[in-house]
Amino acid sequence: MLKRLAMVLLLSGIAMAQGVNVKRPDAPPLAARGSAVVGVRTLQLTDPGRQNRSITVEVWYPASGIQQNTVYPSVIGQTPVQIAGRANRDAAPASGKFPLIVASHGQPGTRFQFAYLNEHLASQGFVVAALDHPGSTYQTLTQPNYISSIVDRPLDILFAIGAVAQQIPNADAGNVGLLGYSYGGYSVINAAGAGLDGAALSEYCRASNNEGPCFALPFFTQLEAQRGLNAVKPDARIKAVFAMAPYGQPWIGARSLANLRVPLFVAAGEDDDVATYRRDALEYFRQAGSQDKYLLSLAAAQHNPFVECPPEVRGREEDYWRCFEPVWDMERAHDLVKHFATAFFRRFLLNDNEAGRFLNPSLPGFKPRTTVGVRLETAR
Image (cartoon, rainbow, N blue to C red; front, side):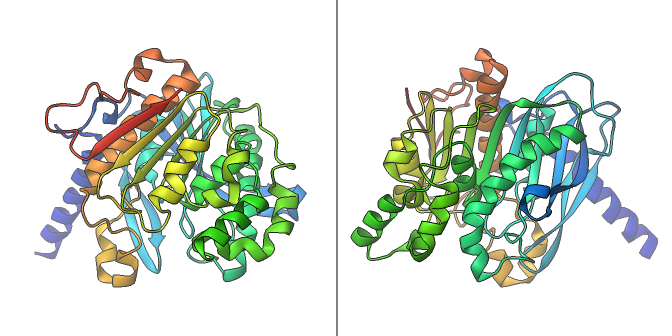
């Protein structure tokens, strides 16, 4: 009996992992997995310029071989979780060069926080390097790190571009996209060249009675010296930025965001009560100087529609709220972000105009009745 039960559990686990490769009938076209076999590898990077800061990185990449099922052991809060996927551990990289996407998790979070998306993009022809930001994971976050990470996280991203390419031979470090969620959304926008602006934050805090991001105001002079408007310059390697539920727009402000010139895609829930829609996502979109910019708004969504939320978290209520989304079907939301992230990065990192046609407010390729609650805006 026990053997039979074990076999049932094993087969159901395999079926669940294989289900990652099956597109739902209501999914938009580019939510379908790409043709590339995906490899995955864990790297340990050390930045000698910052006291040998050690950064764990999970890299998904086009690989040789036959696709296999896998499981990513991770954690949400204090709950160990198993995330099903399809990637060949330590497989040989495929020949050629592929654009590099560096991915930044939330605060706190892990490199597996949106593993489904990283794996998907690798299947579409990208190398995706997801960082565990030291001091920003569930195990390492402290109150002082909320402040120090405002500087440390963008520097992690910039360091990782060259360091990953040294170890993953098919990663093109000269053709880079950035992908971030929540605090990671701020991190990728700052890394792309939009520096901190203390004057903008002070003005916001006066008007808002020291709401939200104003917790950083007493420390901002020191932060500005390192990642401020006058200290940050655009990095020519970075060609496009995709920010999901990005936090911290008042740290940057309109003057600095006007300097952001690379294509920008912002995805957010209209009822986000953490990185609030009107304060953060909407203003990042409106104020960015990008010639090509996009805003995906999900009606009634809050902060978590873009993250992994495995069933194990149901056993600990505090951790359940870290990824719970009250209205949206999470698989549906994940299909949407896979579709738009693929279209965006293929358009601006691979010059794929066919994929770029999906970046249209008319939502081409969506089946009838599947656009409910989905709005895409553009500004050029």
